Length: 282
Ligand SMILES: C[S@@+](CC[C@H](N)C(=O)[O-])C[C@H]1O[C@@H](n2cnc3c(N)ncnc32)[C@H](O)[C@@H]1O
Image (cartoon, rainbow, N blue to C red; front, side, top):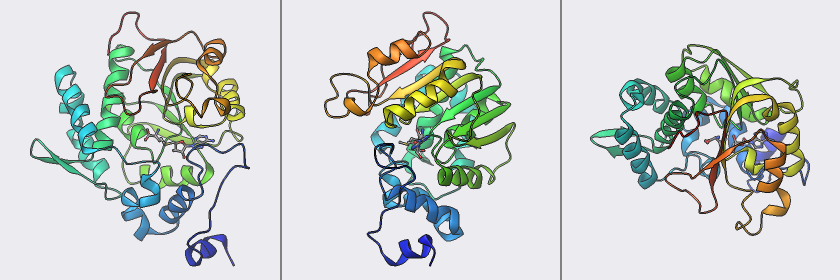
């Protein structure tokens, strides 16, 4: 009997990728099942952005935060919002996301967050993010799709769990990309250098041994970095012993600057940036 069949008939059964102690916050037993369902069945894939277990990890941006991202994009007037309406519509057409009415249009707040990140990248790196991009913890490929459209990136390398990489492929194959994408697992990836590494709520959610391996194989060789962090600050009680703290990150990563997350989605969050234009403000 396949494990897929077992999960369908035993609702409480949990599934993990990594051994205990090496699991990220998202490798929680339920997320992976939702991902496997979306990969295995087109019926699930059509609605995966509304799956309750999936929403504990992804596609859970609030209506209010979506409105805040939209306000920032409007205030910046950097062309991202105007140019991205087609992107929004194509991304939101797949996986049936929860949408809200923003200024008369039905939009997913999660896609608005991906656009806000793209806008940050444009400001920080002066519109030149390079051609070879790595993203650690790519979700379903939403940030990849936005970056491909806005920056016309050449190679976009997504690092995620094996089943999640299959979902990324299934999602991105729903569209026509400007450049190319490649998926990797940490262990199958060779040490390589990148023009930019992105990781939002992902590098900061894997345990120390996994963080150290990503630093060795990906982050330390990347010219530019943009990492939205939800661990590492000492005022975030309860998680620090399993994740690298800021002091350790400062000694292991290229010299970086800290920006505050805006809107802040958890009080201990922050953004690590390197290789950017000195004095760039978000
Ligand atoms: C909270 S989600 C964030 C997803 C995406 N960056 C976003 O902003 O929507 C965490 C991501 O980390 C991924 N992840 C979990 N363990 C991982 C690992 N060992 N290596 C890379 N990614 C991992 C999850 O599958 C998921 O895509």
